[in-house]
Image 1 (tube, one colour):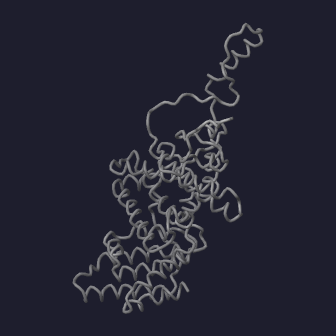
Image 2 (cartoon, one colour):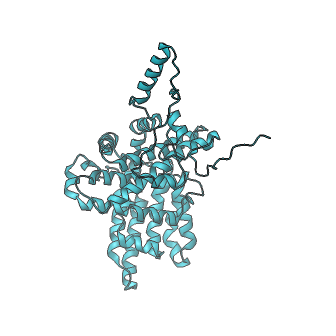
Image 3 (cartoon, helix red, strand yellow):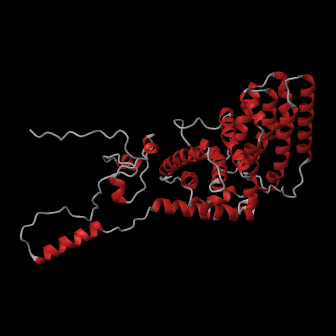
Length: 393
């Protein structure tokens, strides 16, 4: 009777081995199969993000490397061949990670443009930020993650079977980037602040886009709670900027912080909407001693200042990410506590989200969140979002 050799089940194998239905040795960071195929090894389990040990692995034998054979007094040709095999196996031949090179090309040619508001800032995202990433692995992982997410979206729209592959790649790079970024938050200096700001800004847009692409096992998709979570996550951008403001403004990233609105007139109905918000803020402060007028005044002002970018280019992400980064902390706390006026202000933000819906990073965020706000607001507050509902309907 022939018995099959028992083997350890591979429950946490990489996505490439699972797709090919072959046994994975679960080697971290790269399994043996991916190493031989020169593939980027992607793990979707938590394991890949805790492998940072200094342990050394035994070198793997490549396909071209033959196993050593005992000396048997063979011919001189055989001896020479064995010598050549030994030299080949011991040489340090550089390998190319083709998938990461593809992601870099995607960033340079296309993805970086999603973060730009004009030609000047486009050039900054294209190269200076990429150059900073060469010295900041967390930023490089962030760039690769966003490029992979972009490729996943493009592949899905073309019914390309690589969509899930790119999505898994985006998840892996994103998780690695966040872990490395978090470790440096308590030690911001001029040496890392440019990379920190670039990554934090990138994380804002990535968060919007990823909620539309990750499955139910990863995120629940666009929702009010998800939007508040993004706002909370991206509050750190302004804190990083505040740590080295003068240095950043004088650096080659300076134009990113020069938020000069385009000369695009604001439609009369939007001007009226902002005036109603300001009046409501004043009325609330008179009617309640617990209503702090100042943070809301700042939130409304920030939204008004960023609005021209959307009027100039509806698919622009400047307002989408800019308001998330610059929203006052007190306003954020009131959102978390579902304070009615905070939800009313957010409803007006949703109008601009809806205007940017043709941008794949945004999609239906505005309409989904606005619908949820209208459902949880008390009846006496709903008239204050009627204009927003009309704009999104």
